[in-house]
Image 1 (tube, rainbow, N blue to C red):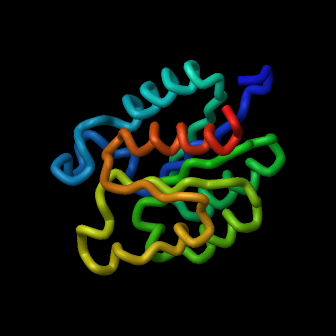
Image 2: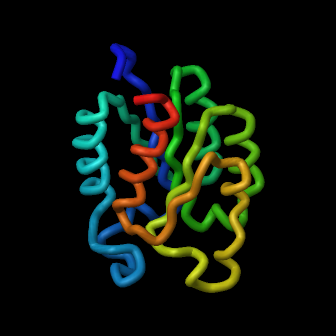
Length: 150
C-alpha cells in the first residue's frame, strides 16, 4: 500500500449494542467491542484508520453519515439493523454523502422473515454481505480496501 492511510467509518444501527447477548443463535456471541477489536487488528494489517459509531436512533445515524463528508472518510461499512428494511432517510443519507458503502448483516436476511428480504440500502451500496456473522465486517473491510487499491 502507498503511504496514504484510508479512513473507514463503521456504522452500527439499532440494537447492535446488545450483540453477544441478544439472540445469540441468530447474531452470534461476539460483542460489538469484540467485533471492533478484530476489525482494528485487520485495519492495522491493511494500513487503514477506522472510526466506529453505533446508535439506536435513526437521526443520529444520519447525522454521523453527514459528518463523514467533512472528515475525508473513504469508505463506510454499515449494518443498519432493522432500519435496513424501513429507512428511506438512511438510504438517502448514503446517497447524499457519496462515499462508497458496504452493507453488512450478521444473519442471512434472505433466510429469515419475508419483511427482512427487502433492503433500502443495498441498491445504493457497492456491496452487501450477510450471513457470515462477525466475519462479514472483516470481509467488507477487505472489499473496500480492494476498491482503494490497497
